[in-house]
Length: 296
Ligand code: NAD
Image (cartoon, rainbow, N blue to C red; front, side, top):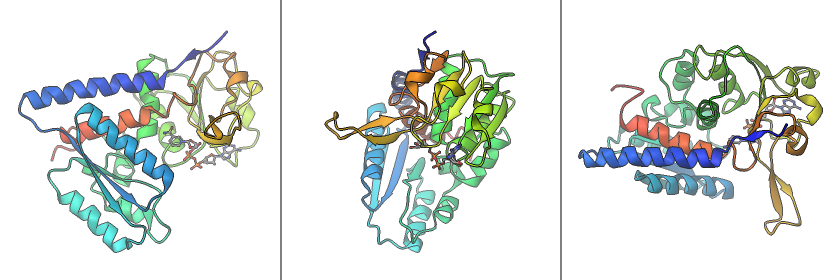
């Protein structure tokens, strides 16, 4: 058996085309384009890249975007005031504060200050709670991207055993909640594993669907999965590679060469889960512009 690839890159493009058509329809009816604002503090290289991808994606689908840059010397109070202004600005449908923030700023405080109605990253505890309660909510981009992959590839989740490895607030924990909800994709029996799980392979071998988000390249080996498993590899780690011009290669948390021959479906790295996050952020911004989650 050789696994079928779950092509997140192609799927993300398709979703972005679908959103672009909706925006054209909106504008044709005299509506205004959805507007996303992004707040970038400091000049961390990776954050710069992520934000510029998000801004470019907005342009591609016809959204308006505003990038607000601040020096890493901005005080917590000043940043909270920026968030307040964005909360009040009726021209902006949704906004994100790119993480990480400098150490002197309390990230949780900033996230809590964002109006849940404009929290298109889905990090506010109210959106997290609404998601867990199976109510309309902005779902964080990476878990939402995973759900979208399962849905679009029509992968059965009801009654399956899903094993999630990694329990971060932005990936593992929300994925475990989403897949155990009474919904599709969902209705699964979910086991959530983490760094203190003993005998990890005993769990991963039971998985019908295995979601891995640890940031440890190649940790899932061929003998840790059963035949026919569906594998969602969230990890993206830069590993030194002198044969590449960039000096590195991107590795997932799954040993692809060992696991793919046993799997029925698998996400490649890169080109799997990663590109889906942009599509999900755009989707959330579109929903915000239509007041689809919160009515007023
Ligand atoms: P994190 O560092 O916040 O958490 C890692 C998790 O792995 C923890 O819950 C920890 O308990 C668990 N873990 C660590 N060692 C383990 C072990 N030996 N056995 C079992 N569990 C173990 O991670 P994160 O932010 O969720 O990111 C995980 C990976 O996903 C990273 O490579 C990151 O770059 C990637 N990521 C990708 C996207 C994307 O594709 N857009 C988004 C977010 C994260």
